[in-house]
Image (cartoon, rainbow, N blue to C red):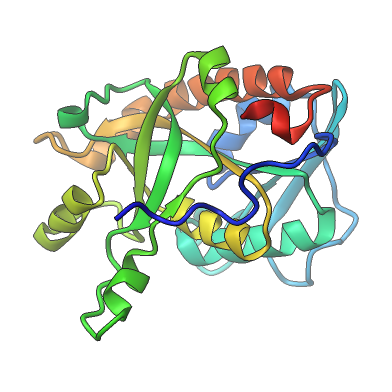
Amino acid sequence: MAPPALKGAPLPATPIKTVLLVVALQAEAAPLVKDLNLKEDTSGLFPAGVPWVKFSGEYKSMKVHLVTPGVDAIHGVDAVCTVPASLLTFSSVQLFKPDLIINCGTAGGFQKKGAEIGDVYLISETAFHDRRNMLPGFDNYGIGALAATPVPKLVSHLNLKVGVLTTGDSLDHVDKDDEVMENNNATVKDMEGAAIAYVADLLTTPLILLKGVTDIVDSPAATEEEFLLNLQSAAKAIQTTVTSALDFLSLKNLSDLQ
């Protein structure tokens, strides 16, 4: 059964004036901040005590806000995974009222689906692979499959690969995860995308997900080693793709993407 589409499709003829970029890692955000000439905003819009970081600026015809969960105060590392990403996205949509969300970042890729390190995918569907609940009806809720906002004209313009994203809170994966990811028809795997899609659906906000491949999920190589080796090059590929996407979005309506 096909997953339900995000609320709001087809897209309205609304001018794209404000874009929210949601990025999980500081290392993923840095090339975009530099390329788009964004400036850190320390005005205190976010709730007191959260580590979230916001950069803003004007890019062509659009106001661009880039948000990242920042550094966890207890452990001193990037606040990754689904809970920080969903909280940050929810709060940012409430504050900045974007016409469009772009979640961009790194992901693992499945070589059996043709993914290679350095590829950038536009995501067609999202699902979870580690929310297992066998109670009646809760199994499908746990998977939480959603069809992403369809943007065929953007895909064609950028000549992007398209694939299904599967999301979980662990960098590694156990046998049951592999089974669910196979059932999800996954091409790429990350740690926040499906949670952001859930928020976008709740708040009826169009969402584009762009994922750059840092490691190959279905290979014998250690995920953490491949990820660290390829993080910088993947972040650069994402930056190039996102900038090209923003160039395409400038002076367009949402409906122009379909």
